[in-house]
Amino acid sequence: MGYEWLADEPMFDPAVHLELTEPDLIITLADLGYTAVEIYGTATPIAASTPFRILSDEGARVMLDTARRLRAFCAPAGDRIERVVRNGCYRSAWLRDLCISPQVTRHLAAIYGVGVAPHPLSAHLGHLNYEPSRIEAAVDKWHHDTLPLDYVMMVTDPTRTPGGRFEYFTGTKAEAAALRDEGATPPPARVVAPDFPGPGWAIALHGNMVVHRGGPLVDLAERITMVNGYVSTDASIEDQSRNADLIGVDDPAVLYADWARFAAWRSREQLDRIIESVPFGLAPEDVAATLESAITDVQIAVDEMRAGPQQTEHYE
Ligand SMILES: [Fe+2]
Image (cartoon, rainbow, N blue to C red; front, side, top):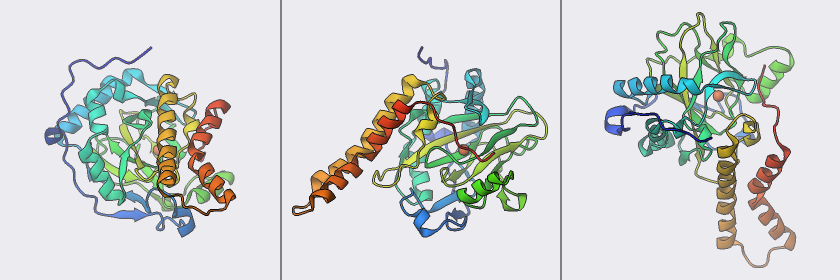
């Protein structure tokens, strides 16, 4: 039980390992066909960005080396993807410091246009995807994420990878579900595969709202991506998480403690608002409803923890 740090890692140094650039273009949820009602209450109206650079050449070199060393800890993530590493931030201090880097967090916040923080569930930080063992398998099935926001970063050189391109659907989750129910997947004409110029480049994604996948490889080859999760710092909006999907996937010794903190933080923020601002003279039912709403996240966490493993959602 427990995690051991990789030996002989370089110290993460933002001046050496980062080279942050701006994306050329931002795609909004409205562009994908979401209505104002569907967008309201989500973390940001942004859906995705075009590629931007996060890591310098040296940063990309350390990232690839770290991902190769962590490959020893690969495991399947449910029935959706064959080889992932979760909780790598408890094994690589370099990866941890990249994933919680204030510079990178501020950069993502500027792209999303809202305050964000690294995801409180530590398994969502520095998530690593590796190529499947079989050529016919997609790297990852069409899905939306169990968390609101993330970036997807190329760790191996995307210009040298035979296929295995990251793709997203230019429609809504409801459209993807309707396609699935007809036995179809998103048609090529409605799929975007961003052009990543090299390793260390990423796109920002509203992962819970944008249906996406890692496409199949043409030849079996090393293909690694890193996904780092974020949440809005505003706890009054939807949490856009399916933490129950992580039961049976993530290390329970870490998952439940992180989950408790996450839910407790969100409810505490909302309880604090009540302490500060509940007025005199409200109808009893309105006060009760306000209190009930404030503890929704805690109540859902309690129910889901007790209910146990759930079927994970995807579109195939
Ligand atoms: Fe994803």
